Length: 249
Image 1 (cartoon, helix red, strand yellow):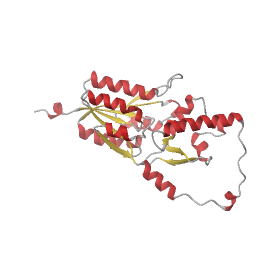
Image 2: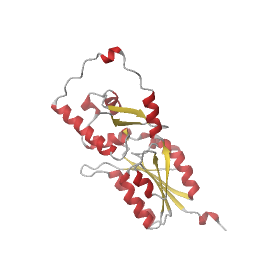
Image 3: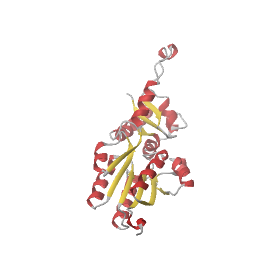
Image 4: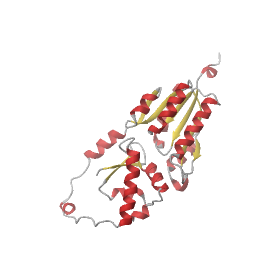
């Protein structure tokens, strides 16, 4: 008997703006144990070096990189592309098992739909992923420990020096600066409603849609913008070169 023919057809579908490439080895190992992995796709905006670690990963591994150009009039362009193609491979291509890598709770209705259609759905993401999304999956696999990283980061916070405590308070921002910061907080709050920490590339994509750039805040990168402002906490994502950010005040 040909055991390969009896294996489940497995597809790996990744939200590349939400999950770092460092998780791929764990995702691959679990997916392989579920059946015959015949499809591997990662979705996101990879223009101008954004989410570049996925591009690097694809150079040495079988991974179909799907460029999703952000729309000026629509949100969640990446989510929509991933959802549509996932439905297609289940209903038209006959895949039995889908591995969806994302922390985004917007995928929860998709997971429920796929399971109603008889597909096995495994979720992959961080330990802070939305609970409803996790419970909707056939099984949810933790491949990113963001809470542990946050706790470690908080333990290493140094006490402020005397010079720092005597520093002059920052000047009041201009109206345009205040408006820009309001947009940043709005975007971060919207994303943080799904989890405490937000991946910096994901936030940068949203801010770009709002026509905001690091130069608007006098910096060359979003990492510099958030690191120099005490209202935000920034740390490295465990096992990744990417950073994540959250509101402090």
